[in-house]
Picture (spheres, rainbow, N blue to C red):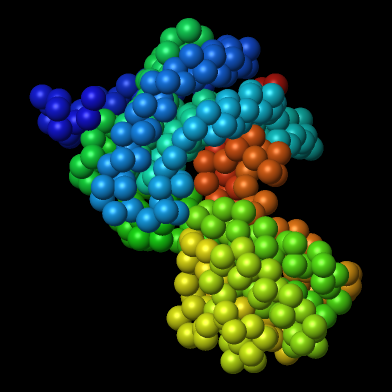
Length: 426
């Protein structure tokens, strides 16, 4: 049921959800690892049992998106099928398998006066997650927050709301089966933008952190307006630098995968930088491979001559996140020029170097200050699940608390526990 069909003020609805989330989080904070793990077993079963309901809701969302002239990349991010639902279940199983981070002793030491000090992981509290069209985010975020002891309030974009609601309904049934409050995972049943605004204001202190998942405009608005801490990144303008000492066959394979595996994700490469010393041999193969895969190739003036299917790149291309089968290519004089280009146009998300030269690898990884820096591999691996984190709630490109994939360990804070035996301070 969406909010517009509900006879209740939106502010009242969200206030009630926030209070229930805070109470549920307090209960969850003391839940045993075994109890939380039971939730994941029930959640997988519930999603499998509810497959038809979830896919039916998703088909309604897809039809509405197409009627609203959404592009193919958007519809792909929105779409679910049995294989993607199985992927959701696999992610939930993986999250269950991880060690419970809550209560984990991160460090401990003793002082000369006999005091024993420990730094212990604790949940953040209540997380507000605002996302756009990917309904699987509801399951990933719900599972990650639950495992790390946090309650979560989800706010889906209108295009995927029915799908996300269907998934959350399955998760809430699993929570009830695990004897946990169903309010540990809630979704705002509203298409109103006012709901997001109120969440950004913190719902009277009930929300401890906001996580935006979506395009540049969404994340920019969240970071501009939020009155609570934010995990987020504006966009993923990811680069691959193909060094003069690259294995060219490996480079072709990696570049093709990084662009075309899934073009609409933030880890897709948008700009490929090629050392000028290998341009004449490498560039014809690279452009042909991408063009044959129906990728639009936009080249600088030094590389456009190698294939008549290439089109000229403009200055704006270097700062564009396409999220589509389009890539820009530029010849650079050296690794230093590649690093300078990335520093100027990169967004701190993910960059990769293709090179067999260990000195070049080391220089690149030490010079690039992005959240994720890769060597001889596709930028499409910029994903919490691929990192072994059991999925992610997002990719953080800031430098405080969490950076890169935000998994269960990044969804905790810590407290100090100080144990003594009657010591008093002079």
